[in-house]
Length: 136
Image: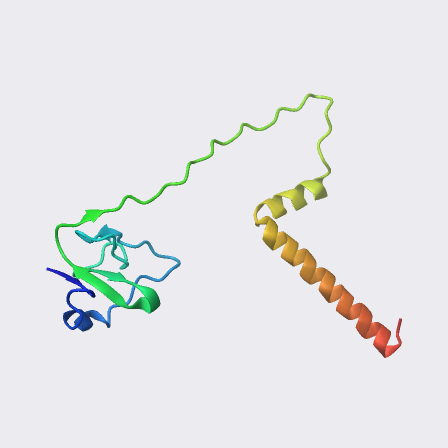
């Protein structure tokens, strides 16, 4: 069975209650519809026929059997660098700087910059509130 919205507009309406997998936290099935560039948008391991969704979660194709799975694109894995060796006379950075560096490395640069901007905006607002009240 293969239904597409171009060929079977009325028959495909029976599947409009089927929703795609959520965009985060799940892996899609990605089985390819035979004779079409569409892929299944349901969760991996679903039961029943494969369903492809288009714009606004609209069902555009339904099929079962005769599918080929699309291999997920894999990002190249970066090899871990060995720790830098220090000579016996070389000094380590101070502990607070090391703690700050490890904290910042857990977050993206954008997140760190947004946090710094939020803290500075808060300080600016407090400063102006104190100026308006005449306490500064």
